[in-house]
Image (tube, rainbow, N blue to C red):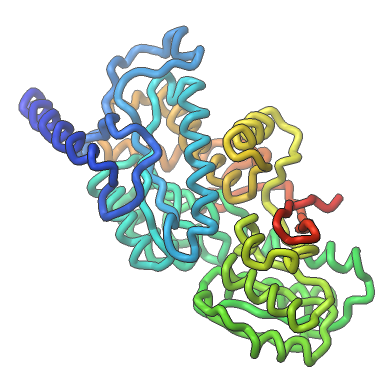
Length: 431
């Protein structure tokens, strides 16, 4: 039976390699960042190693051998959400190269299998199904949006495939199931830091306006946190709550309504394209007060959207490229070498997600050889190891609660600084 299965798998691999020559991954997604010639596991069996022996001196020096271990990356490579997903892809690509150079998983390489979730729930569902049932990944990092996670994560949980949310900060994500965790700190922990900094910069803030994308689960969760912080924590006056869609481009009505009430502070929860356009139209119509952006605006990809009007926006951060730690320095240097700029939060969180899976696999392999487990067993044991471990990542030292919630101590606030012509900008951390 074992020889027959091996022969069958060889035929499958040959077919996959022929299809891979087309340069496109399943379901019409973008080409994967990893080499197409790396085989993944056969259905129902764990990825096999060339040898079960302990890592050699060459492996510890950074070389890898044997079959690659497939890890799924399900993020938005297309749609308006791609402004965030593009940064996640870059973080994943850097992590794949980085950890394989360090020896992968005890001498075995990892292979990241990319699937495009686009910007909606169905896209995430399709990507997860493909990664679980066709690509036979050991775990999935994704999707980009909390809205997508509430639809796609239950699929992985039912299949008992570990999921790490790289940017899913809405309330209720870890509670989706036993196989769901997140590397992204919840909005209730991160967002209030931006309000605290805004008040430190301007103690005279009294009146606050809020705007949020009503069709996005994360934005609805985030605005609830902001509104509670405004009214309950700081006893400020909430003068209006304006709603919009993530697909909107004209915000004249919302901006006019806000400006007419003369708020000292405006807080926007949306995505990069819609949020950036609302910022620009507020400034174009004459608003001169402080603006706080939510996590969906936490990307340099909003710079071409609001240009000079982006200047001064405050955004709370779960990652700082200035964090003084060896692993963050290595990540920062690797990112700057490829992108010629400082790494953003979404890239740092994705790198950390890959790191967690690599280190959990390495720890598991030392106690229960990966090659001795079938795929279902490996996925289950990996999930236990992920939750039990602690990790020194670019985000700082992190671990997980038994429920899958990240435990992270360090948070930051950055302020956008734009050139006068609006052509270039940067995130500057508030001390």
